[in-house]
Length: 594
Image (cartoon, rainbow, N blue to C red; front, side, top):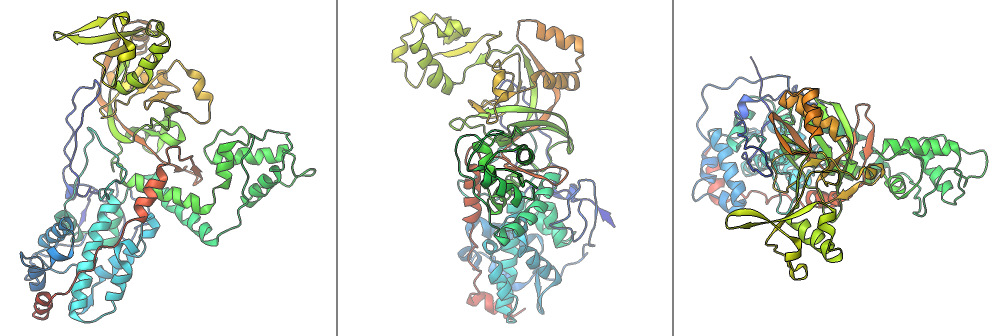
């Protein structure tokens, strides 16, 4: 018998939020866990990639179940020990998990741990391959319990394995979040959900390695990162000597600098042939070529100039790179499983955007993202419209922090930048002359708003792309084209400026609105604003990925511009094992009566 099941989302419901000027879009409700495809071969977890189109052999369900285990019924009863052992939410999940299986043991029998239990314990011991902690799942205690033959120990092992399985499911699905952990909100796009009952039933249809493989992201980037992690973990375990290059002025071709000899040793440690024939401190062409290859491999501007970003990349050893991979794996786990057949991916620390057809980019470009003080948020949504010759409604925060102070410095600022002052008076929007306003007395709540008209100086340029979100974020053109020549492009107030807005708008209007070249050209030639809805919209994922593996297996690392990797790693490291299940008198007695 063959059947397909797609990977679920555990403990999450579809959330729909709407912002900007996009028509409300009703998401497609997921069909449920057992109607979705697992697509992984048995035994593949965690090293073999998961492919959405694959199928797996399933274990035939038993038509009749034996009677429930008395001790499990007793343990999860109203007066049982479960409520006193586990956090309330986790106890409820365990009760639902066992209830779906008729309160039968899932991992043990009277003879000890079953094959399924052994497979789970082995998998739990290997979760570090995903950048997760076996200790945080209580693996050492479970391994010790597995060696003990007495019934009370088997009961503790049974409950401990189920607890670890549910926690790991939540971690792999990216839905089990600690308080304060980084989020990745999802708007409009559907989010699959899977309850403990569904996870219990899934164990009746597929082997443990298959189930766990299905819970982790199936996309190729996650799988490549798993492979890269093995390489960097081995390098970090060897603790190699890594030459540290001091920071200083940018080193340019032909220059003499005492740090050049350190750079030479660093490139040699990476396998480059950089032995010079003259002064070791002279930045010669051969070393420059090696530096340029290194810069390209790290996602940096391959100009051969050794500046701050290049020195930081050189000084990052295997342990630091391993940490970046672990943080990136965690972020992928928090993103939607179904990215879309075609989708937009914005990688904030890479300052890049790509329109992806599966694993292949159909269009790529540089982007400008939010500065450190006004970071671009991460989330997933769907591009629902294109606005040609847009107006710019200045967000309240920018109005207070930027526009009002600019007016105080220059009374002609609004006129010079083609910005109007609008207010709601008697239920109607009216324009107010700037001279009627006392700008010195304006506080944190403005009784009016600013709008910049279309035109050459409009901050959004000639076009913007809108999608539902809570942060008033959109993609747009910009009149400040010179910023794309910078290596560090965290320059905006949060929105994302595009290097090739015309090409992207052309793609969206042709494929999403059915426009031809004549219609597109005419709309852009006019000075009036035109909002064009897209038929189906295009999924967009704004992500923060400091490690990226190309299809050749080369890993590029990007500066952690918002210092977010540290937060993610602290969250991962702060995870602790839940208290071990106890074997109270009532449970021991019931266990002995089985």
